[in-house]
Image (cartoon, rainbow, N blue to C red; front, side, top):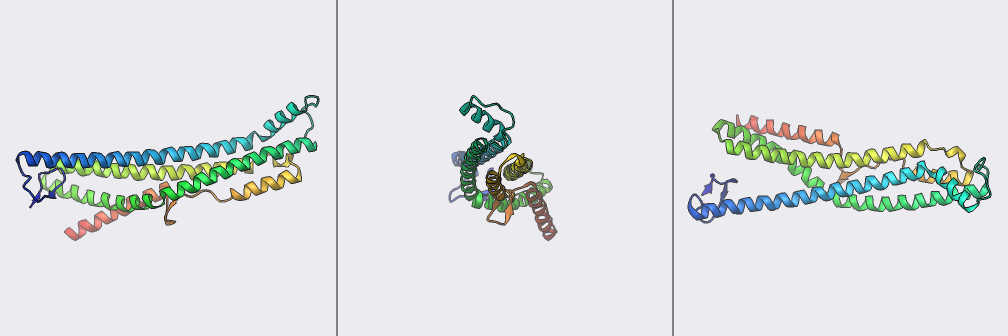
Amino acid sequence: MVNKHLPLPCWYPFPTHEGVLHVVAVLLQLAAALCGAIVLVAILLLLIFNTQRIRYEMRIVGYSLNTIFHRAKKMFLEQNPHRKGDNLRDDPEYQKVIGDCLKDTIIHHHAVSEILSLYLDQVDMPVAMAYTIGAGVIAAGLFNILIALQDKNYASIILFSMLISVETMVMFVMSLCGESITSESIKLRNELYFSKWYNLDIKNRKTLLNIQTSMVQPVIVSALGIIDLNMDSFSNIINSAYSFFNLMNTQME
């Protein structure tokens, strides 16, 4: 028989309605919920940490592009202390130093691309499952809250309200992480586009053009290539959950 007096109504092969077994069943359910919460928090923290790392590395690439002329000039004057810092644009040696700085930027960008590729592989399946399950959990939670309101079961109202809040927060954080990476990649592309490329020689312009080619399309973090991690997807998931809730409510009526 299902015991509805437990935090999570469940069937056990032994009586759990009263006594020591009831306390044990409650403690086991609380322990399971705690373990699940710890795993969920750990995954979210890992996602946030990796997202921040990718954004930080992208900003380093953007900073290197913004300061490339300043760094090249400083390196050139350190190597040639007898030279003055004026009218270096047509100096082949100065352009060579700029080329070396561009090569370092390309190497760093390749490293960022490898980290990003690993990140996309890591979030692919977990995010797809989280979005799919989350939408169902929110819809089912709303439906159970509606039933609990009719039965005046305030414990269930609080429980399912907390569950919906957690699921919504998880999907919001995932969407925000994906959105932040996309925004950072667009910012990096704009910084490259508005750089003073006209101060480069033909060789360095070709190198810069190769870098720009790899940044034409913004980075889109997606789950299974179907669901994009952004705030638009978050709003669509919430709308889908509410539509599913309305469908279940209509069927019950």
